[in-house]
Image (cartoon, rainbow, N blue to C red; front, side, top):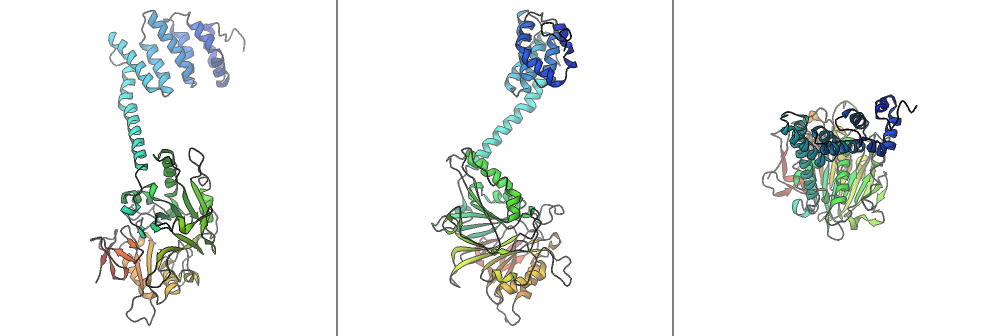
Length: 502
């Protein structure tokens, strides 16, 4: 550009700055800032035009540091000449504010206001700026500070598994419908179970199972926190089984940044192929010091999982895993890569010998023989889904009523089994006890007499099973009773109650 059009030594040419494109203009100001400040020192303060040409341009072009230097020079020069410092103080305050230097900005606005009061300017821009900061910025920053302090305090709450739930317990951490959150009112929405198991060293370990909608909210309401989760089992990648996973991992990262013990907590995650694809960007997470925060193990039907990263699962968490097939399409693979699981625990099965096994079907349609994968389990979590289109055929993606009946007959015909029914469609409101009883009755042996070896109990947020004897906590008394002596109270169609029935 011609020297006569824009010359740093000729302030009357600075008005041509706007004729330059953004990149050339900002580079010109940065390059010549020192010389610009030297020239401004020799200009009278009352001649505001060259000061504001540069200052306004810097603020408009996000050159806040450069604007600060210009108005700082104008403030000092005006003050020396006993002029009106209100405007340069206010404009320097804007430059400070836009750099996030709020305390310095507030001091500038205060200085501007003090001069305005001397000259009897009541409703000046500095007054409005101070009011905004006093009523909005500072209180909001204080709220953020308090929230951060509360978060750090919450993160450092000690583990409370033994006190809050106890060892070898199965707890429902969801309401009863997780498939249709868009249609529910939030009353029925939720997803997931929480399992506490004793490992080989007698330590209580916490395992989250399919943590879907509202899992962590309900989890916290019980009195538990991120420190109480040691592993996560995920049967497939749908949101109603994974929605809380990202929140849990986010809290894990914050815990590892702020825990008072300065220790890295590591979560073991076991998931399907779809889960791996969905969360692959998070699974390599590390803490501030580069320590790994997550171990991931892929669940492949037909496999037996006894270790993770070289550590024995029995010693670490108190279980091993048999991975079963599930006939349910995942979003991230576009294939039926969902899985079912059998957990082989360390809990002794006093009645039948051996150790307790817990089956988790996940979401699946029924296929002939599917129930045989769960024939040695004593507890079985199965997802019904719905009964839509169940006219002469099984459902395509879920068990439905007929699939549940067939699966249970294959799994434990005539043998003791506690079946926990969950993931009802919204249309089952007020009918969960009825549908559970229908499934239980039709899955019993035809010649079984009065003996009820199979018990089907619908899951809700109150359900709590003591795994050592398969007793269920009565809702009203908190006393545990054998599962076959529990009846369901559905007088409130939204929340089930579990009552002792002699």
